[in-house]
Length: 128
Image 1 (cartoon, rainbow, N blue to C red):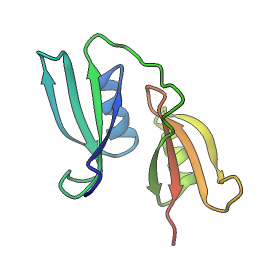
Image 2 (image 1 turned 90 degrees about the vertical axis):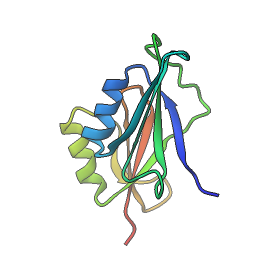
Image 3 (image 1 turned 180 degrees about the vertical axis):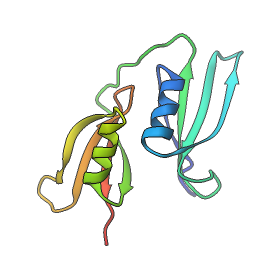
Image 4 (image 1 turned 120 degrees about the vertical axis):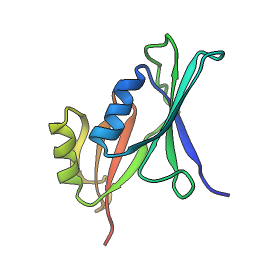
C-alpha cells in the first residue's frame, strides 16, 4: 500500500492552483471537469503520481468556501531552510500563521503558512 493523495475542497480553483504552483513550487499534474457532478478536480505535487503522494484540489461548482472544522490539522512540507521558505512565501503574498523557529518542546525548525482557503501548511526543516 501507499498514500496516493490528500483531498481538500477549495473555493476558487484558479487561486488555489496558483498558490500551490507559484508560491509552493508544485506542478499542476492534471485537471478534469465533471459536468454531471458539477465539480472539477486538479492534482498538484512535486513529482508524478506514480512515485509521489500529491494533493487533490476539489472545486465544487458554485461553492466559494468551507468551514474548515477542527478535525483537520495541516499538510506538512519538508524544506531546506524554513526561514528562507517563510520569507519567500511572504514575498509571494502568502499568509504566515507562525513564524519560523524551534517547535514547542523540541529543536526542529518549523513554520506554518495558510493556503488561500485557510488550510494550514507546516514547513519543516530538512534533517541533516
